[in-house]
Amino acid sequence: MTAAVTVRFFASLREDLGREELELAAGSVADLLEVLRAELGAGMSAIEQENVRIAVNQDLVDDLNQPLRAGDEVAFLPPVTGG
Image 1 (cartoon, rainbow, N blue to C red):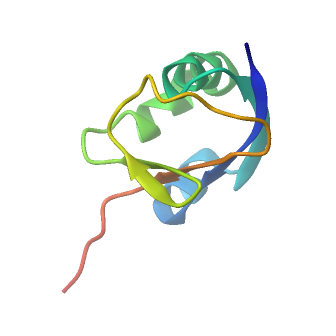
Image 2 (tube, rainbow, N blue to C red; image 1 turned 180 degrees about the vertical axis):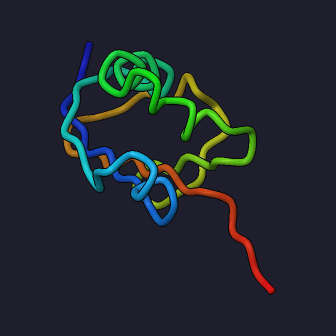
Image 3 (cartoon, rainbow, N blue to C red; image 1 turned 30 degrees about the vertical axis):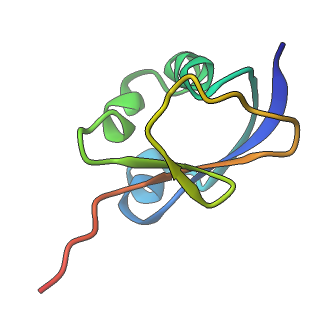
């Protein structure tokens, strides 16, 4: 079952992709990644970097099989750099 979710891109990811937010449908985080591959094409490489983190409703997730529900917010967070 798929659910309509809001996908947000932060900081350098937003700049790399040229967009801040998308509305997509997916049943899990893994499903969402497949939908994003179709939507973003080559731009997907920006969010497939090893150190990009994924948060669902502001909680970091490691399990890509985590189910998504209608209204969830999925955020892609680039690595934090500092000086």
